[in-house]
Image (tube, rainbow over all chains, first blue to last red; front, top):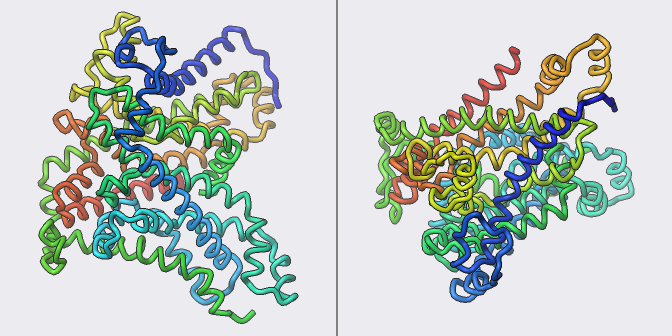
Length: 277
Length: 290
């Protein structure tokens, strides 16, 4: 690496700029967290008190007792984990077939899947809504989960990764009489861990945060996911800022914790998908 | 090796069936729906939808609200794209310097907004932007500036929406630019330095040209993403005041899922799809020519 002499003034400017940016990114979160522990009397005090003088967990209590926020929380956990698990399974299976099987029409089918990557989600929204309605799947877990499982990007990504696994490993196993299912579970899956981790992280985060789809598919309160519930909260508890901030914390903080824990993989995954794309 | 179709179908079958049902057939269905007058009455009985040819598109062309939504969405794209590029490129270059301290702290904090749920953080922002007791106007008042009524003023509502859009996007693009910067070989800079190039010249003649692949990728993704603007205006303003923040997808949502004019809404989806494809291709063509 190169090392250049820099002036003190330059260093102060650079770090000053970065700190201002970092503050702009972090302060909304700190304000959200601190407000969620405040009593109504303290919320509108300016300049803001970052640490509440009389902290309270009343907002959270109300959120889970009278508003029943536990239900959307459970729904979101169920939907996001099912989508992630199923998507990993079927996209790694398809990825293996597209990368390592030879069959007629393979490249044409794969190209068709690739082409759908260009199509915005709004293009499929209305027909899928009508289909789910016809099948009676609105307001069901199946309706919330299945459309999210079919991800062209995940198949593409898995196929690209599995292509790099040496053919010799697979051929040797086939010579020994191993079935394709054995090869998939014992060779392909273990060697694809980095790709699987990347997809798992992005699929889970994406489904946790997804809003427009559940908004359309979950029309009954009992099937709401967290983003839908919190958007309703903003309308119903218009002036009750404490409750709204507690709700926002419940939606946002689990993913932030997940991110801080798995940060390495997030960053690597983005660099990977970005450069490949 | 002879093709064993049983294994092929076992492995690609589940994926293909799901993709057919939820992606490929719906795409074609969308085109077809856009040529019908599918409305709330057809919801219970599909046969009541009539084929109307291009009538929806003719109507759309005359629909003032649709034009408003189109202009608003492009306003967002045209402002948010250069601002996002400028901020994230600056951050990436500064984080890539050897002398910069606390790198991982900065990187982590820039990235937090990106993984955050847009709906929930938009509620936080709607309070930060509150003209009476919001943090932003309080901060401006410290410098003697009287902040505007952000979300209540048709002039300022879109800038406020854009602020949230950019705030969410900077971290992700910083990471992409950072990865691009790390691929530039050091010897280019060393050679330039021997030739007496200033740091500005090094940035202009080495960094920027070498970053071109990243730049193409980043701007293409922004075109696709920003044209689908929805959650931010939905939460902050519901498209108001005076439709000043009505976006294409928000208008699609309203027509389709408030009024259940699903045929008309499909024609909006088709126009959006064609615009995104055209702009993406144009961007890639430009990249080839440069």
